[in-house]
Image: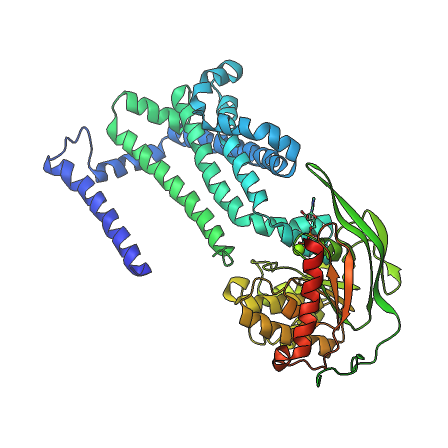
Length: 250
Length: 269
Ligand SMILES: Nc1ncnc2c1ncn2[C@@H]1O[C@H](COP(=O)(O)OP(=O)(O)O)[C@@H](O)[C@H]1O
Ligand SMILES: [Mg+2]
């Protein structure tokens, strides 16, 4: 299949699903209370975005996601690099990290509530916690992708430790780091959502949870569209970055 | 005996040794105790000579070369380059060509060749000019914008050689540079290397475990024993230059090859 064919097929499939979403409830094939038609949901989204309460919720959620990301990524990267570079540290903590990574993090939510309450701090702490492990693992993998030969070559030409870092480590790790960035953002965003849905007074997750509890399907689905839009935007940005430095990836 | 020419190489040689190794020993601190890798290695490489080191796998050839390049510190002994001790990497005195794929995959051929110059912040103009000249020297004119994965194995090693020569060091150290190539490409590359050596008048120390390659390339072959590595024989290759592929079929060539083989076998049992 050519690239164009793939894009066309994707668009066609998208149009088909959207069309069905509109047509089936209208024709009465699906209960409109269960699945309101697309046009109604889009109209609802427009209305919601105009409400001060929703705007505030979006602002809060965005702030939580960003702060958690800023905490989790450098911290996780530092631990991951340490685990990969330092044999002793790696040997001790690696299995432990791996086991914690496999446990669903939401089990720990009550503890975060006990320690941080149910406000901004708790959302950030929980999201950062649930993101940390994937960042650690990705950073360790990225460091291990650096070839010893490449470091040796740079040193043989008199590269300083800083030059080895910027001229060998960074470019070697870049594809892994971008992929890690994308995956950690998914974990991070999911972390904030779960924490907000579990117990909160504001935030998109909180709104979606309360719409869900009251079976307000148009609002709920409008929320889903909003989240999907944010996810697509972020993914495409990272993909674009990846494309820019992937000329050497074979 | 027609190829048994005078031992003297056609190029005038200076008296000073390009490299002088004296009493070099090395012990690695391995996980299960100490690994004696090199034992009392002494050798002299005359300026402008092509010296090949052969020896069984694991006998310390790479270690020896790394120490000559200043990339690893020996347990004891000294290494002089043009009379001055080697204490760390010095790209103005020694260039290194590594095994297999040591090119940076994220840089084009030209940028790979420029790498040593960019490390010491040479002006952009000079970098381009030198790198272009090196690309021509190794016969890759027009391939500068290719990435390593777009080059064949032989072409990659040409780029590696260009990168090793770009700072114009008097000495070039090569650690099994053609080991990963197929037999035919390997022969061609050996021949090319001799041409480049002739044009640039470098001193070359070349590690291989192909005896044919050793005899074909060398002015002299140093044979190392199995671990701990020692120099057990030094053989002058008194074949005329320029070397030709036909020489490989001669008796002289065969006898030289056999002598090296006997040395390696006798000491490795
Ligand atoms: N960093 C190291 N730590 C411990 N032992 C090493 C190390 N590097 C090499 N060795 C050992 O030293 C010996 C010589 O290695 P090397 O110089 O790579 O040999 P060669 O290049 O001739 O195959 C080998 O037995 C190898 O296992
Ligand atoms: Mg070796």
